[in-house]
Length: 439
Image 1 (cartoon, rainbow, N blue to C red):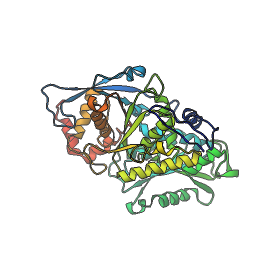
Image 2: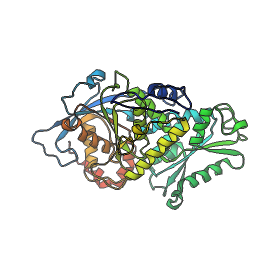
Image 3: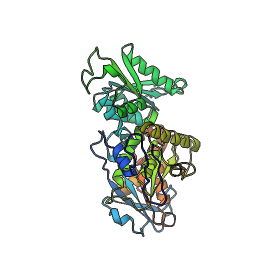
């Protein structure tokens, strides 16, 4: 097992023992060991843009940003320049929304370490669940189709009259089943029952974390039935091998892809390892935020992670955070120092309310116009459910008096496909966009 100590900002934790790796590993060596595997994405790289903020004289806007204007610097100076005190009001955007045309950035990161494991164990089918406009279900369907795997998507509620957005893409790439809300409430039982329907009497079902443990132990859950990747996958007499992925890909294996991103961004010519960074991310399940926080702790980075709560209560997010950390330590045989894991109100993530809290999925008046404003000023698309919330928080925290010498960085998770479904639901808000006015 390992124990870590973090006695000063930026000091790397010392790992005294580890169940999988060698004794005496540093945090950087630990991360490198964990990331020594096959990946879905060809590389961890992503673009970083700088958003400059300025107040427009004489303008008194009523929207979320008032008289603030945005300017996008697509080729900012990074590295050592981030350590210098920033005289301008600005924040940086990690453009993970550009990773894939149909898969949200945070979903691509969560699946980055999972799909090669499925291939290595000759999985034939993947079962998961989500809402009618689930970005996670879409991401899994597309990623599986690209690798010859069959996806089975259990979507909550009724089929919409018009298929659009994530729902449309999920239907095209995957096998969709709509589940009544009363049955969906028992997610684990629902997923397990559907997986066994797929296998019949001649197949195997395993949960995602069980597959991860198997990959670390170098064995396959189906023992003698193991075949090489892709071999006889479509043969009629081949037993189906089904893996269940939890809603939102909120499993421990999802952390690996986020760790990979943290390691990439911490390079000296990008965000570096010395300067204080405040990461902002919108939180659905909260898994990405926890991954950012854990990755920063393991690498000894002086980074803080602020997650804007959208789909759960603060107690729910903290419970999920503790669950993921516990899973991570158990599955990888790691024991992190309690002081590192309790530095933020008993956890590692600052869970913050949205600037204007509301029931998840609701859009408030003026927010569609705010998305239009950002798009026209910067060329960056955000959606009113997720990424607008992160943009608002980054704008707030980029105030020079609030941020001091800290660099504010927003992780852009994507989400534009969701706009199509919202346009049907909030027609009056979107009709305002056609009045010919400009921002």
